[in-house]
Length: 316
Image (cartoon, rainbow, N blue to C red; front, side, top):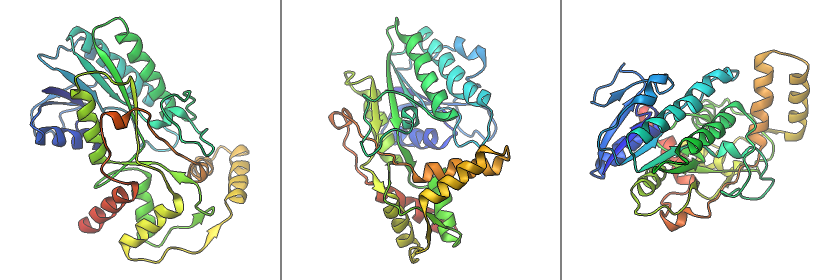
């Protein structure tokens, strides 16, 4: 099968290209710039209006991994609008012109916002993103759906939880490094849960969803069963062969103090601390009503985190 993968230089995109090539698919990688590109492919900034006129010859499916993510705190909304909304819309228009059979849009569970409160969020939940990233992904989903609505192109949205595994960027990597350098201070008792998905499982699910004979669902959450923050820290410490830090600060007290401080100042570092504290203490539990019908996850959250720690130890 001939599959176009956008964001081929990014983490998920590059891992997916390698996964699909190993599975004997014909892969067309799309890069935002030619800098550092070694293999052949398409080079264009999808947020450029010219991208909507692209013609993809004999491509069966598009997996859209490109987007603005892992940006510093305070990144302007315009960056997310360009990377996650305009780029997705331009790609959708090009897909219609090219008569693509299926577009798989890699979104995020952040589109649901913070409202699980102990319940696992599935695909039926309302979208109520609470940050610029999640909001832009939600708008991107809506823009693509509107463009493809009257076309012959199927749209399937895939919403992964936090991706873990070798070389994965993001907050888990930062947590590993803090624990490795003995700079970690725990906030809260660690009973709240977080959801993760191993990069290999995400790639496997994307392949099956892209190549399946029939469209099972318009949306798939992709997440392993959640684990507690306490388990996350313990798993990392076990791989690092270090004791779990015993000292922790009261979560509610720290939350109240940081939110109060953020409300009376415009200092970016203070506001960032308040947001980070809220994210750390938040309960994030996601599940899928449909994924099991097309793909069986192979890795637990703990296995993904262990693989990520091992890669860091090997590299350093």
